[in-house]
Image 1 (tube, helix red, strand yellow):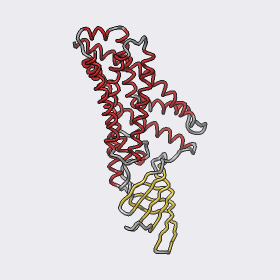
Image 2 (cartoon, rainbow, N blue to C red):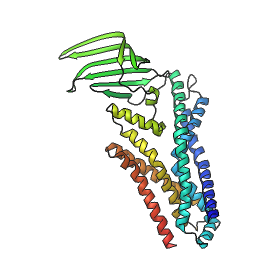
Image 3 (cartoon, rainbow, N blue to C red):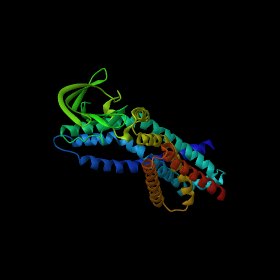
Image 4 (spheres, helix red, strand yellow):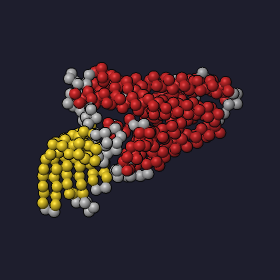
Length: 359
């Protein structure tokens, strides 16, 4: 029995490798084409574009993990079905549930491997790639600021950073002061700021507007010290896209957002998606078991893989719709993110047991 389990796991992992060899080059090519659109002679070079794409390759593998699990499971088990080895196993008394448990063990190993790569390889490499890209675009004068900037709040003081330069210097800083009744009393704009070692910022080229009833005053100063409301975490980290954060970074950033009275649902969704990805991976690989036995007489793998790809795409799109609706409707982030994966895992288990009883 142990020999059979090892044989099954080996074939499933060969399927994983085959699926990854099919999907990763395809999506990497799409990523490269997208990066080449931003290449310019004076800044972002094509060699840097290739480097950035290679640095984001582990992230692409993480994102494709559930697809790799589904298509890899179909490939590995399908090959055994084509050679009648699954039939021989069933004749020897090995149940479909037993085959599913063994296949699921391979999925657990894959999920753990993807989790380790996500936390300690994919996230640091992707963030480094983003920094290389942004610094190259900044040289060409094409760098875009973070969408909406970076916002923070402390009591009645609200601040915003428009962007962070390639030298980790905040630019386009706005500071709003309100009364407890939310009346604006002062507005400060600074072109840039120098971050001091003690955590205070020295605002440069500062414009100050103040209101006292119906009276408005305006003054401009070259420099102005300011006790920043922003976390002492690296500013560049705050400007990174959500998907590039590791679990540890997401947790700390959520604490920062909640501590400064800012919405954190988007980052909570990202955190729970990462924690829930192993469940989705297990669900997808379990789907390969009833899928294989339902298509056992199929003459080839092409049709199975095509149908598996369609099912995987539908599951992915449906999951994204549910997550975005949950974000739009301010639903419970953990429930919205984990529920689809748990439901899919439950459906896969039900199908496995039904096939085991019927055969």
